[in-house]
Amino acid sequence: MREACLACIGFVLEFLIFYAAGSLLAKILKIKADISFVFILGYLGYFAVFELLIVPMTLLWVPLTTAAYVWAVFMAVLVVAAAVWGIISLRKRNRKSAGIWKQHSWMIFLAGAAVLLQCLIVIFYNDTTVDAAYYVGTVSTSVYTDTLARYNPFNGAALKTFQARYIFSAYPMNNAVWCRLLGIHPIVQAKIVMSCMNVLTANLIIYQIGKRLLENDAKKADLMVVFTCMLQLFCGTLYSSGTFFFTRCYEGKAILANIAIPTVLMCAIWYLQEKDNRNVWIILFITAISALTFSGSAIIFPVVITAGMAPAAVMNKKPFGLLCCVICMIPSILYAGVFFACRLGWLTLAAS
Image (cartoon, rainbow, N blue to C red):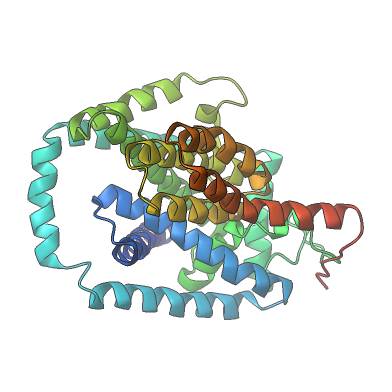
């Protein structure tokens, strides 16, 4: 019961943090967006900043407790700033609630039921693969040794050097930070709280893609969420995004497949519709950084950007768009350089 209560508290707190971050980012970029888009902005922005802050701390052997308190202060400042700017206010929330019902009507309950079903599948599915052991083990060893990824998650031995494949993906350390702050068990935080949060975020991205494809019709976008859920349910092969979505939603590659890459598609559609809107590129760059947070497989992100955004830039006849594509590839290119330098023995990242 204690863990269930902590899981609910953790989910609510993390949801509020993501929304506050998105509200602040939307205000800074002067983006008029609905709640779902604001949440997506906050989710991506949160992990982009987390990556930039926690990776240096990891390399400097900063204790987990110190990192957790620093991040807690950052989150507190974030929420206070959002409140001071008047973004999260009861008056606006009430006005938006009436607008939400008018746009969605009963379809919002159907879409909500689809999301709830997916969350239940994710919660009750028992995955005991090697990758599952890594994502939970990394959090566990970090929490119980008060370190940031300095112990082998499989046998508990102290690492002599960090593995470049994993150390630049700070996503597991986010779980460790929340475990330290709230006292949640690592397996509950990793496989339930964040899995449900990832399911919610992925569906909101699908909803946003649907709105942009279907003439900004919220009801049709709700239906797209439902139909995509049905499609994912019948994805039974090992390497489909649907299988990763339902069985391994707490893993970095699954987040890439169901959140980061679909965000590129969302940005591409947005760019085709608003070719002079430079906020598209800012959000894409934030996505490129957050993709590294999720998994080292984000090394392929330049290919994703080339496939998704470069054709849109050509269709819009915007050479500047091609330059922006290259700029958005920089995070993955830098990671690739460090990764291969470590693999070839040119660079060593000491862990002890």
